[in-house]
Length: 260
Ligand code: 8X3
Image 1 (tube, rainbow, N blue to C red):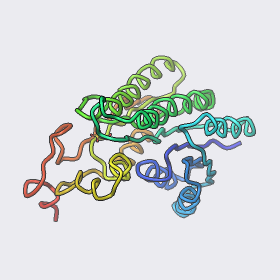
Image 2 (cartoon, rainbow, N blue to C red; image 1 turned 60 degrees about the vertical axis):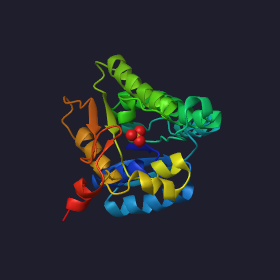
Image 3 (cartoon, helix red, strand yellow; image 1 turned 135 degrees about the vertical axis):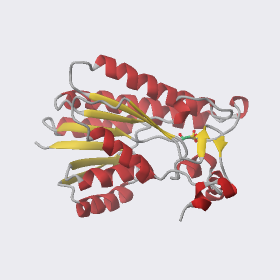
């Protein structure tokens, strides 16, 4: 059976952009996310871009039932191997102080960013080891620096960073590479999901030039296309208009206004 590149969170944002780029490399893909209709649209685009084959695997990474869909699929396809796993499913919910924050938001973040990513990696791991493959985790600059109103989200991304480091240690000698991609401000559905409205999300990127999902996808492709002896362990990517977390340049000094 063929070898596939597996992308979680593929229905939008960075996952979607990575799938399109991996398709250009004529790979066979398994694309997963909750929204089946979005996956079907992406499948068409990937095939147009050159993907050899595309399997849509809709499931909710936040739930045990969702993860069972994945294990059932693997049980039915026992010889299927994975060369690249891009763990791109992730989200932030809310910016309230811990004392005011909503436990349901915590659950969504912990179940997706931490448990979903850990469990997906675990169930696919033997198949990744079989190809000396590559695991690409979507961390964040929030996994390096904490900010007010982000305690739980930052904790989940610190967890992704710790997991990436631990995995790399546990996989030494297998040839499997682990990369943690840590973006700053990327204009995707991320802020709309976090803040609950497009209007609020637009303010986050107001008068500055954020990164795009394609910018991050290109960095991921750069990592996975290195020769097998080269493991890019971490990539920290900020927009030029963001010097650090909370250090954003807007208005006339922003590249948005300087761009031709
Ligand atoms: C997204 C980056 O700065 O909004 O992971 O937390 S930030």
